[in-house]
Every structure is written in structure tokens, then in C-alpha cells.
Image (cartoon, rainbow, N blue to C red; front, side, top):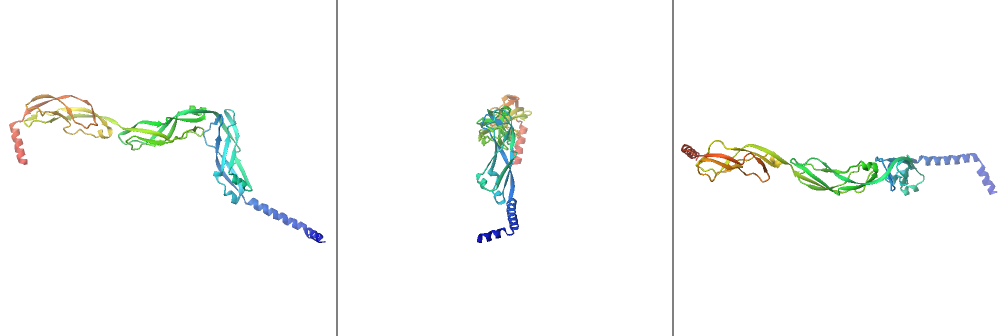
Length: 329
């Protein structure tokens, strides 16, 4: 009796009850679908190439990975959770191939439900060549200007060569691997610095990017300068003698550090003849003596000896000099 009554109650207005159930299920499904959100990530594409070929195009490639999940779950997804790659290991020889894109994702995210992953494009075209090995010269990148009067005279790098792996055609056209920039602005002395190599192409693998020890040698610039009509002084002249006529002149060429020599002027008494041993009037041929700082080198001089004529000091001149001294006193 009870079973019959229960059956009658269930079947009573069954259409309305079934419609309500359908509406409830529809609302649930609508809520679940409306709660799903979509988020896209641009992911760099890694080339896996442990075989005999390597990709030629040095441009970095990327793919778009789209994730669909519940709103509260999709906020937990970050670009660092996703990686994309293509495997070139099975490619037999040089040529162009369409290779599938493989997606790796943090396995913890796959536990979410729902969770959908889509990648675009699913296949990429890759041009590959035979893999080659070469040893290429490391070239330091020197920038800037030394302090005025100084210059870079030599640059050494250790080690001098680096091993690289890449497509044979690219390596044949690669003469050097540049380092990071090395500044020499206002430098006046040699120095050693550690720097890394710079990448030249995404298709070329530099096995040792650094650091490399670069020694930059800096020296003073040598300048040659002419000094014309420099008067020759008389050193140690006897009080009873005087020079007859004008002082002899000489022309010199000096060599030294540009920073100091370009503004240098020869001081008085630096070029002279020694007359300290002469006590009698007359004409004498005397060697020219030069007293200059040791960092200047005399390259040329117009004469080795000069002729000087000495005469006795006249009595009137002596009296005049004496009176002048008395007046000054």
C-alpha cells in the first residue's frame, strides 16, 4: 500500500517535476561553463638538437599556449609553469621540416578539473643543416677614448679562441666572437678586466661564454716637436769679459710625452756653452751643452758647436755699471 502511494506521488505531475529537474541541471551546467576562463601565454620555443643536425634560422621563435580552467584555478597558472620545444634529434639530414610542438606544463596544474591546453601553431617549419664545430677568435670590443696624450697600444685576451657549434654555413662566415664592451674613457694606464662573449646568433652555441681575461695596454703617445732659433746662453762668463754681437742660436727637435711636450717651452739657460775657463778676449769654438728633463729626448740639433767672440769690458762700461749699482744701493 505504501509503495503504491509513493509511486502515485512520484508520477503525480511528473512532467512538471521532470521540467524542474532539467532546469536545475541546465543551471548547474551554465554555472560551470560561465565560471571557466581562458588565458593565453607567449612561450619561447626551445630547439632540442642532440643529433647530427641543427637549426639554421637564428631568430628566436615562440608559440601561443592557451589555458582554459575555472576562474579561481587559472589565476594559479604562470608563464614559468609552461615550456615549449621541438625535437630535431630524429631528423636525418639537411632540409626543411614541419615539426610538432611539444608542451610541458607543471603537473600540479593538470590535477585541476576542468583544465584544457591548446598550442598555436601546433607545427613549425624548421630549416636544418649538418652540425659543425669550429674554434673562433675572441675579439675584445674596445670603446671610448683614453686620456689626452695616451693610446691603446695592445689588447690581449685569454683564452684567445672559443669552441662554437652550429650550422656549417654560418660558422664558415663567422670570423670572430665579440666580447662585451670594454670602456677606456680617460684611461692612462694598462689594466686587465674579465668580460663575457656576446651571442651572435640563436643558431650558434658558444660553449664557453666567459669570463675571458682581457688585458688592455695603454702607453703615452710620443710627440716630436721642433724648437727654432733657441738662444745659446754663456755660462760662467768672466766679469771682465762680455759677448760681442748677438748670442748664437740653435734649432732642436725633441721627442717626449705628447701631453707635456706639446705645451713645453725651453727655459732660459737650458741651452748653453761653458765659458768659465776662458779669461782672455777672443773668438772661441765651443760645444753646445743641453740641460733638459730626462723624459725628453734630443733627436736633432742644428749644430754641435757654436762660435762666440768675447771682448774686454770697457772702463766706461765698468764705471757705468758701478755707478748704477751705487744708485740701486
